[in-house]
Length: 181
Image (cartoon, rainbow, N blue to C red):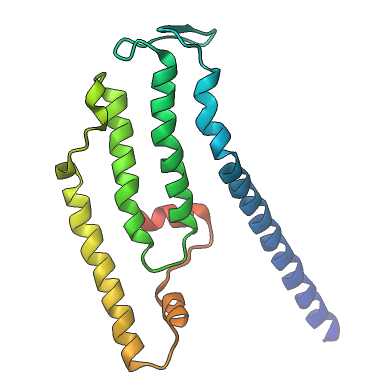
């Protein structure tokens, strides 16, 4: 009987250590990426300051901007904040994290518009395209907030306890992705 109980305890300890190891590895990767973002932003300085960039993979011709370095600078200026917002969205524990979808949509729209249109005015953001997303996100955030403060007034719990109660926490990265789609 004691052997079974000891084996059960050892198995739980090993699985807990494996989970902790995965958390440490994924956290280290995320922290390293965040620490490297200033260097990733300045990657445009390694691109030649000319209109045509010929590499062994492809030949890129910057027609509108007349400079490949400006194109890469523009892309990194949108892509780095977008990636940081994605990290924040998927690692945030607070009830308001859905509000991060608004700037994520904005940066995504700007990047897609830049990729599809070769014009100088890609950064001219039309708020009308974001209106359907904001019409869903903002009321849902308000309803969650109202639900939290309604329970806060009727129950003797801390705000952190209520946030933990209302937060859905998938175990895996793909579980978090599936939660939104």
